[in-house]
Image (cartoon, one colour):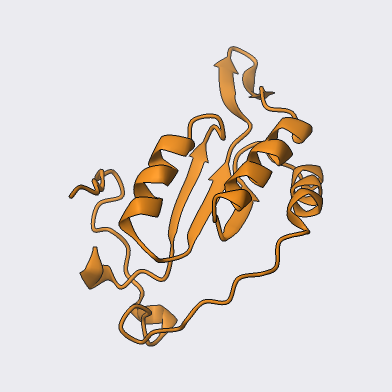
Length: 130
C-alpha cells in the first residue's frame, strides 16, 4: 500500500469484540497510527423497517477501548450505533493517556488533501502478509 501514501490505518464498522486479530496484524505490519472505530450492534430488517439492535453496552465498549489504548491505538471512536454517550465514556476511560505526537513525513502523507487516494475498488480485500 506504499503507493497510496497512507497517514494512518483504520479498522471500523466491526464489533469491538472482533477487532483484535486485525488490529494485531496491523500493529505488527506498520508504524503508522492506528484507528479503531467499532460498532455496537447491527441493523435488523423486518416488515416494519430497520431497527438497530445494540449488543455492546456503553461500559463494555469503554473497557474494550481502554484495552486498545493500552496496546497503542492512537485514535478511538465509534461507528454504527454508537452515541455521544459512548464517546464521552470512552474519552473519560482513556483520559489518563497523553496524546501521542506523530512525525509528519512528506514521504507518507499526501501533499494536499485532493491528492489522497482510496483503494480502486471499495469491495477489494487488502491483505497484509510477510
